[in-house]
Amino acid sequence: MSRPAAIETTVVDGLALANTLRDEMKREIDALLDEGHRPPQLTVVLVGDDPASRSYIKGKQRACARIGADSAEVLLPESTSEKELLELLDRLNCDDGVDGILVQLPLPKSISPEIIAEAIDPMKDVDALHPLNFGRLLVGNATLISCTPLGVMAVLAHHDVQLEGAHAVVIGRSNIVGKPVSILLQQQNATVTMCHSRTKDLDAVCRSADILVAAIGRPRMVKADWIKPGAAVIDIGVTELDGRLVGDVDFDAVQGIAGLITPSRRGIGPMTITMLLRNTLTAYQARKISQKGLRKGP
Image (cartoon, rainbow, N blue to C red; front, side, top):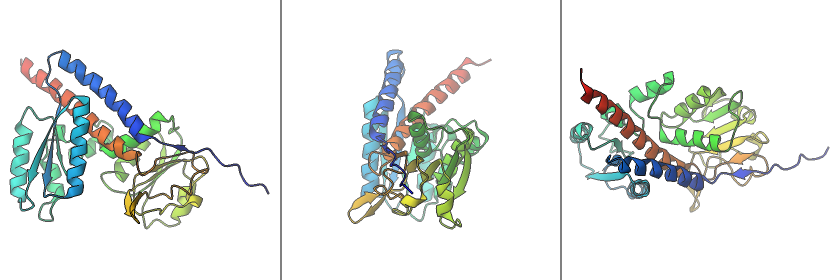
């Protein structure tokens, strides 16, 4: 019996796609500025001095500058109490010059991320972690959607991956990635199977997937023989292993099997930041429309 011919695997260049989308947003913002409007503004709050978080925030600020959006960084000491952070968020919620608010995770153990998520004005919640925004996603009328899932959908759309009628398998059930991406896929008429580390016969379930989204945070957990030939594989997990970043999928081993795959570098990461910018611009436009309506009066 002859061995099946190898498939040409498309490796997604997420950075190139991100730059294209950022250029589009810059043109949108330039048009707003030409009309005399102020630029959108994103405020990022960091509690503590985690180097990785600081680096990530600097990346967000550079991305804002590239598209012509304003950004601000609020650095709070590790000793900041939950009450103090809530008071800050209340001020930012009331500030008409702030369009997007993002509180960088993780937070100190003394601060509840759920309480903080609920304290952000849903119209400024560019991370889309407020229960109201999650509920709107569930019923199909969300304005702001979690950034990584939005990035996943943009990649699939850019590469013309057929979603309607496809079987999509999502490994991971987090509120930030797994759950929202499964909802977005369903809304595009894919049939979705949600899996996790305790799913029975996980490898067999994955082999049935036309689209596989891995977001579980276990390096190289998904093996080559888990992949259906020609499947679109979206690898969201990033773990440092032996001095290099690796994903949840054994990237090298699936070459010639997957039809499409996102790499650990220049994959979904740049798209996540790009969708944060998109959410900030969306929040700005939605608030501008809302404020215009309020000013009209009776």
